[in-house]
Amino acid sequence: MNEILNTIASRSSIRSYTGEKLTAEELDAVLRAGLQAPTAINRQELHFTVLSGDAPILFEIQDAMGARLRPQANFWYDAPTVIVISGERDFRWTQVDAGIAVENMALAAESLGLGNVILGCLKAAMLGENRDRFASELHFPDGYDFMIAIAIGHKAAPKEPHAFDRQRDVTIL
Ligand SMILES: Cc1cc2nc3c(=O)[nH]c(=O)nc-3n(C[C@H](O)[C@H](O)[C@H](O)COP(=O)(O)O)c2cc1C
View (cartoon, rainbow, N blue to C red):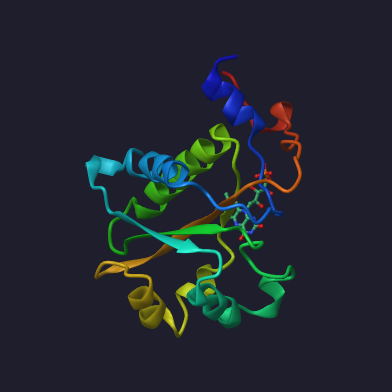
């Protein structure tokens, strides 16, 4: 397998991090992977807000989440970096584009030996009664909504990639 296929095969959602921060180069590489992701008609309708794991806004979002959605200590698992992706609310492909961008970033992080987990659990809180305040505090451009987030840091422990069922999930005609 080549390097990209190896990275795809080894990626796994990491939910336990050491305190070590990302270097500026690591963060830059992950952001570039998001910015270089394809978008429908090359719209580039996504915005990336980078937060430190101790940013007060994360705790505000956590407070706005229902208890059912946050069984663990916090929704970003004390990762040192959280990147929130917002996107143009009224463009039909924004959700797909955000998904592609976040996976590009997940794979970039994995390729650098960094753990990561994609975070959707804050969506209801982000789009709820505090939507405008959170959007403003996170510097979303006008007309942009929360799409997805990703937590990134150094893995506290390795984790095996998930199993899959090729028989069930693939049809080759
Ligand atoms: C759109 C999306 C949203 C997700 N949201 C969360 C989340 O809020 N919290 C979490 O711990 N994991 C979240 N995950 C990670 C999934 O739970 C994980 O990808 C899945 O269990 C498969 O495990 P793996 O990533 O280790 O292969 C999310 C994944 C995706 C694709």
